[in-house]
Image (cartoon, chains in turn blue, red):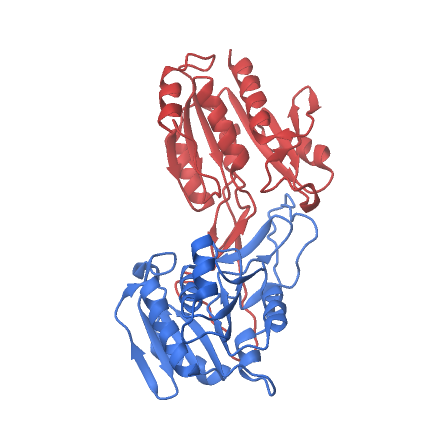
Length: 229
Length: 229
């Protein structure tokens, strides 16, 4: 960690002096004091990307949900639990030259969060959870009228029809790039050490071969440095 | 780990030759391939208890959901994700002299689990989750007509009116003891290193002072050894 921090401070790479926001990990959306809705994001890809950006000299604000992997060294670290907290942290971290939203943010939260533990009523009736849509952090930042980062990158975790879904997501959100991947359980990507991504830009989709998440991170960080140069 | 395993094999304590089932940790109930419902059980108390039972010479089958803490050494380890898998693992581990259900088993699973990732429909409509009641492992084992363990112990994680709720739970489930604790967020017990428990038996409730989860485990293991002697 100390070595990484020193390296980061000394780094004189292409992103020196650039501020990049990276979100990572899952969000946890509470149901009651003991239960919550989670997702299988480990935070591995976002963490690797933040590390790669630091190595290129960037000043990285790393906003992470409760991830399985430890956060990288040399970043401004902000820990959050819920989507709403993540949105607040992103807003507090702006302005930035680039923002990369690698976190798997819950689309919905439980609107009917209970202050005490929901109990079985003994009659076999089941709880009813009412949902509310979470703020769309990616779309919100992509559509900023003033102070929008020059480069806004979203991630799309899909289980089917990956490129079509991700291309539509890029248009819908108004972001510059989408990094799409297939998180079907049989790929072993969610929670695993490898990733197979397709980078979707205005001019089309570029599928990268399956490689380590560190390698994906290095390549993506290089692309970001080129885009900001 | 090796030392613990050797100690366990050599242990000639009061539980030598006794088979004890311990369940521990949360269960994860899938919503779709990437989302699931979880709870804040770290598995710390169940893991400490299993370790204490091994130290007293017991042959421990340790059935754990996806816990934060690593499993103890010297046990027969069975890893599960869902409540239904946990029930199957308990049934496969029987017969036993005692069964201690320290896991925070989800009361409900999502009946409408989706084979592909649930997506926003673009019209702002919200997903509807249908729930189904999970099998009640504690009640099922407590009410076995044949081959019931001599001692069946349940745990009750409550956020209010702890002793009343836990005493009612003991009667309702048909178990011998309930280890009750207050998991209100302000206690810091769920996910923390300390516990303040009340042991509820047929003859009443005994509140123990707040102490480390290891100390709670040692004292509970001693009580179990006495009950089986």
